[in-house]
Amino acid sequence: MRRFAPVTVVLAGALVLAGCGSEDSPADSKAELSVSDAYMPQPVSDSMAAGFLTVTNKGGTKDELTSVTSDVGEVTAHETVGSSMQEATDLAVPAHGQLVFKSGGSHLMFEKLKRKPEQGEKVTVKLHFAESGTVTVEMPVKSATYSPKTGH
Ligand SMILES: [Cu+2]
Image (cartoon, protein in one colour):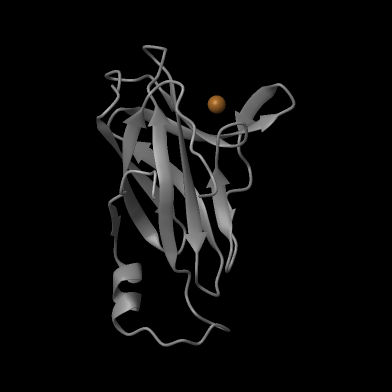
C-alpha cells in the first residue's frame, strides 16, 4: 500500500520537451527529474515550517537546485550540522541519483509565513533547477507528528 498522498508534479520547459523526443542514451541524456514523498508537518509555529521531499534524477546529467519559492512564505534549504542548522551549500542532484530532504537531515525551511498551513491543505512549492527549469510540487500538509514509513 502506498502511504503517501499523490504528488502533482508539473514539469516546465525543457523537461517536458525532452520527454517528447526522448532517446535512451544514458551517456549524455539530460537530467530527468521527478519529485516524490513531499510533505510538510503541520507547523507548530505561526512563522516557521519545515518541508521534506525527494528529488530523483533518472537522467545522465547532474542538475542543481538553485532556489525554492512558495506563496506561503520565504523558503531556504537547510542542512543540519551537529545540533544546529545552516543554509545548505550542496544542492546537487547527481546523475542517476537523488537529492533528499528528510526529517533529521536536510529540510526546506519556510519562514515569514503569510498564513499557517493546516493539515489536509496543500502548499505549492516551486523548485528551481539550473538545467531543468522549474518543477512545481503540491506539498500536502500532514499532522505535526507525521513521519513517513518506509518498507512495506
Ligand atoms: Cu531549518
